[in-house]
View 1 (tube, rainbow, N blue to C red):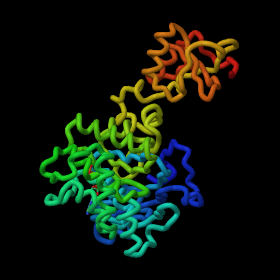
View 2 (view 1 turned 90 degrees about the horizontal axis):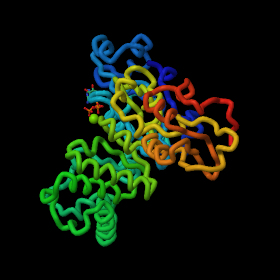
View 3 (view 1 turned 60 degrees about the horizontal axis):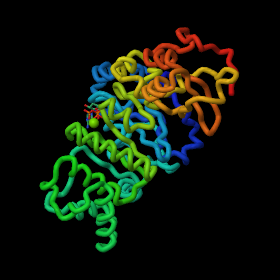
View 4 (view 1 turned 180 degrees about the vertical axis):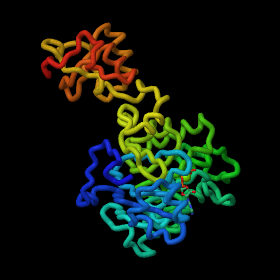
Length: 375
Ligand SMILES: Nc1ncnc2c1ncn2[C@@H]1O[C@H](COP(=O)(O)OP(=O)(O)OP(=O)(O)O)[C@@H](O)[C@H]1O
Ligand SMILES: [Mg+2]
């Protein structure tokens, strides 16, 4: 698939001139493993083939194929896809833990592919901290010393690094456990130590490679809340790999859905669920409870004369499930209001149409119609 056929349903600028505003800016990135991998991205007789066909012809595995996207400052960017779809390879390419085969890659406007060894080390140690699935903790060190480790290799003095580590231990909810060793902690607690260690170096971006997939569901939920909280409170930029759709929908501002090394769709959780780019994505999101993800924006109709002034008001980001409850309580239609402005009206029939994946304007709503006046 070529770049043109990738469906990017977000408004992110793809103009390379804007790259400096983006934490990561990735263009036409390829990673091919195998003999003479370099020739694959430029060979048009190969780039149109499937991964399996390329492997058969060349013996190479095209793990990341012609991928382009931006990660904006302060967003949680999720990379999702089945096992083997290229998620880890892609994210490791961002700091050149894996060397890309071709393409362009910038971090805050700086060309990552042009970085020398010391600049790369700086990128990995200070600017883009990685949190792995297997926590990679040092077993003989205390929690506090594990958290301080990243600062230690940066040459931060002992007193300062212990103070910062203690602060991070507290921040991730491990207050009082600083003197334990990793073996004396639960899996979820160990993952919190990994998170605190990454946070201690105060990186511009946190990279997570399936950090919670080894955790049991309840603890996993806790950790997802932790990530959401960090994001909300600190506005920290994160790139988060998962193969779990519900996790992706919960933590992601935007989701890149990968298949065979390509991004098949890039969009908000709502866009992925409500406007799947193709049958593959549609199938992927089939079991998602739409009312939990889709917002009332998709169910609105313009307000008619008189409707805009009174009645229950909800925000446009309200998910349909919550709006159904509000409509049930109000007994009629309710207003969608943002900054004191009425954006539109929703009622029961329109909300149900959206849940069913139907166009709410296609009928079934007796108060509907496009002739209404905008408030
Ligand atoms: N060092 C390597 N040499 C050859 N092939 C590799 C190498 N690393 C990864 N691959 C292949 O690249 C493809 C993508 O692998 P990758 O690890 O990125 O997938 P993933 O989406 O992270 O999967 P998972 O969910 O299982 O972690 C796979 O086909 C894999 O076998
Ligand atoms: Mg992986």
